[in-house]
Image (tube, rainbow, N blue to C red):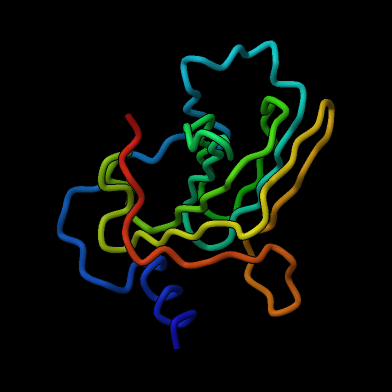
Length: 149
């Protein structure tokens, strides 16, 4: 029942009367000011399903936001990331309301169970098309993600 509810929510089935903002172009990133772009020698590739998505990486030890990658529904992108071990959050939804309220009533948020490890010059690919045979195990967050500072 919970997967069906999340799918209906992220697909925009719940009323949302707040004005929609333009969603950033696929491949747009928000990067922590402390990250030196020259250190981004690894890559993350993301394939979106039927919802707009923001994939966030947080430093596993300090829980500091490192990078957010924005991706329009049904698109894929690959962006550089610094090597490290990260906690990953996946935020999906229909209508974009900005990095404070995310996708409004359609916001869903999941945390990837296993740490994402990027060593120097490695690539990781995640596909957000849900599948019972999938290997990207997540836990559902029942509250909306914190706003980006």
